[in-house]
Image 1 (tube, rainbow, N blue to C red):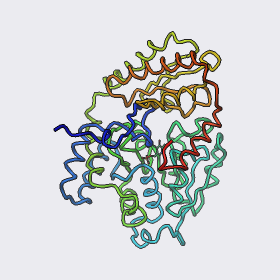
Image 2: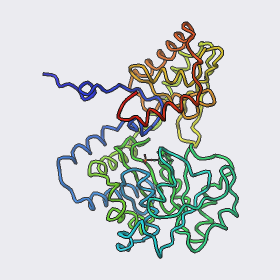
Image 3: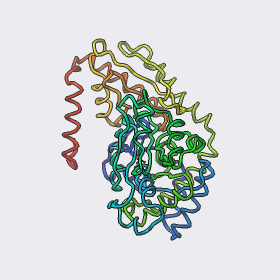
Image 4: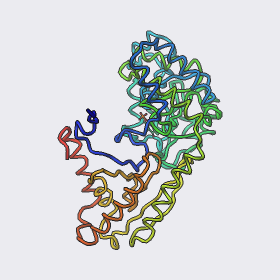
Length: 401
Ligand SMILES: *Cc1c(COP(=O)(O)O)cnc(C)c1O
């Protein structure tokens, strides 16, 4: 008898992900090597410290850092690293957190880096008992903001590289590191969703953090790489506040395997495959009235070109967010990248598609636009109404919309 799959058994909605690596959708397609490694590990025991020491070797090789370990996720890795900066390897201090009496506990961050990646960056710092000291203003941070904020209480500096951060008026990583180095403040860099595994270490960052479950195609996890002493101090937080951010043996093994696979992957053909999807959509949507198409290179220089789809509400008869909602509401549910949709456009991200899904996406966009024009049932709700509805729906969980 054929076994019924999990999706059918529980009646889960099928999702086509053209939004990128989103936690709320299950992050990314896990590479077969990582699935196998995680599965093998599940039916064995292993000395976790030994497994993490192996992870350290692989992370060091891939990032150029002295050492590393696997955390529950990047957010956890940030808390662990900041906590490590405060306690060092003093186990009594580690058990005492988030009580920071008698410890230096100020963490400096440029104001434009205090973003929300699903939760606020600042909270991953404050969880440890540390205080967030914002530098400058959202879109302008001057060198004096940085230099003058460093004092004897400063224990670390956090730097976020992401399309989420304000891109203008920030201090470049290189200069940020050099000022902090001069003043002996360790720099922790959040690179959760960046492809560049070696750059920040080369620039002299003390700790660098990546998500396993994003571009690497690993299981849910975080990669912490950096100076040996600091990485050790961060790792030891597993005996303290980071017990509640535990990564399991399958996550550690899967992350190691994903890193190995990343090293061997043919990145040029992976890029070509993704670009073929973008070109396909360009062709299918080229002659649709009221839709404007542009190829958009990734904001922070990752090798991803997405298709930007701008929707003219007059000509299409509906707002961009209404189109996104109609795509999302169907079966399968198509999730476009809509974080900038207030500007009247969304993106199609080609990174997480299974073969053939690009055809479904192209057809559904054409169909929804044709339907909206025929029915004249668009331009019914504002973006604010949409945001309020989505919040209300969140507050009703586990009741589903
Ligand atoms: C995704 C992301 C995070 C959170 O990563 P997790 O591994 O899901 O905790 C943090 N910072 C940035 C910039 C991100 O893109």
